[in-house]
Image (cartoon, each protein chain N blue to C red):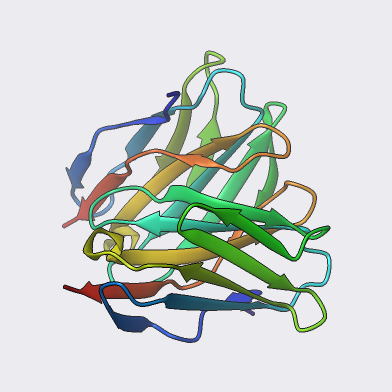
Length: 111
Length: 112
């Protein structure tokens, strides 16, 4: 059973607008969450993380929000740029052990 | 910036043959992982390795798969008798405690 879910397989956003990527999880033991970005034929690269003691973490244009009661996190990209077009994976772990990945959301930023 | 290195970048093998995928993790990292992604599907966990032994493995990681860290630097994934459905991108990752995982660029395995 999938413990991390990304229910939107794809998303298209106009350049300059906000991209919001969503992720849900089922395991209440998860305490560390990450977003990875993946270009075709490359390995995932780390984007931003958040631990369960926080509800928001910001890094430049990227902000991750965590709602523990809803077991939901989201990644906001503001403003979106064409170079942000990639597949975004949400991942979660409990105490730094195995990472569980979502299925990914393919973001297309339209110039 | 430190990086995880994987070789080869692309491996073509005949069904039933053995393959070894190699990874050089970041030197001070403690946990090592193999993931794979079949074309068009999600990234799947295969196995995690800590303190020279497997700490967790998925149902995908059956008796045909094995991992080892033969010389303290390389981290290998062996598939003893490849099947067509083993064709995928295989990613190695390493991590220290409480940090994000660093992924290699992947090895594309094609079983024909």
